[in-house]
Length: 255
Ligand code: ADP
Ligand code: MG
Image 1 (spheres, helix red, strand yellow):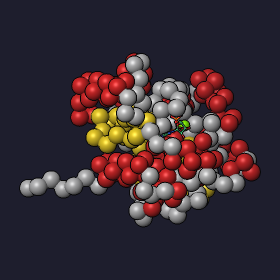
Image 2 (cartoon, rainbow, N blue to C red; image 1 turned 180 degrees about the vertical axis):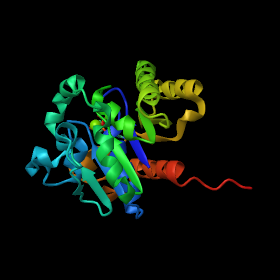
Image 3 (cartoon, protein in one colour; image 1 turned 60 degrees about the horizontal axis):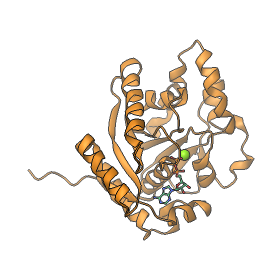
Image 4 (spheres, helix red, strand yellow; image 1 turned 120 degrees about the vertical axis):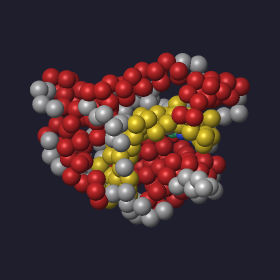
């Protein structure tokens, strides 16, 4: 199953969610691949300790721009492989916009040949509705849209949802919304109002599990660890574990 983690903005918790879901399932013995398509390369930096020594030809750059097979690297977590990103991917949109081949399929063409080796593939998306995001959605079965508390969030959700519908129409008819994940939740009135509006507007498309704001996340990533390796009892680790159960191991319905 290939799942994109997306939002239209930066700082909503996409990278944190990608690392937590990928590492959490890998710790449970699943074979997982994380593809970092954000040129900021934050998940690459957390999960590959020698990241700065990696040449651009050994990153996603080679697949998107040179149409090479995916550059798969082992991560610091057992069972978790990663295709790192590269800062030069920030220029790809211009190149892809003028490309005349199937520019939406460059990731798909290579991922289709290796995805059978994995139980789950996660794609950590950039904070923009770009050709890279379209590449991610074209190869995905499902999309998780990450939302953080805020008055203007509903507008961003509408825009990314439109991209999802466009990709479904033009490139990938079976693409599904897995749901909206509310992150960086804190005990303020603003947050509880945002969540209430989300649940009223999008009802059961909003995931039951809410991820709290928790400083252990920053400390874990600063130490270049996923949250489960850093502190499995952290509030955010418990929440992400609950989310993994909600999404991937739901209790069986009574017959
Ligand atoms: P994005 O990938 O959407 O830009 P990140 O996952 O990088 O977002 O998160 C943005 C910032 O917020 C990072 O500094 C990260 O450490 C922090 N962060 C993310 N999730 C949480 C959380 N649940 N609690 C506290 N800090 C968080
Ligand atoms: Mg990110």
